[in-house]
Image 1 (cartoon, helix red, strand yellow):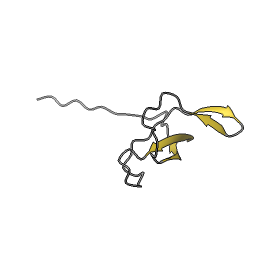
Image 2 (cartoon, rainbow, N blue to C red):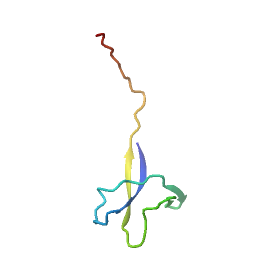
Image 3 (tube, rainbow, N blue to C red):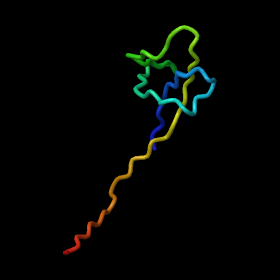
Length: 70
C-alpha cells in the first residue's frame, strides 16, 4: 500500500470536507514540503486542508471468465 497526499478544498464553504473531491498530484519538494500545481479551486476566504489515503494495488490476481452458451 502506498500513501497519497490529497488537497481538499471546501468549495461549498460549509466547513465540511467529506463532500469534497480530493485533488491528487502532490509533488515532494523535500523536507516535508509538497506542491500542487494547476489548482483553480482556491480563492480568498476558502478553507482547505491536506489529507492522506492509502491506495492498494492488487497484483497477481486470478480472474476466471465463464461463457454461457444460449
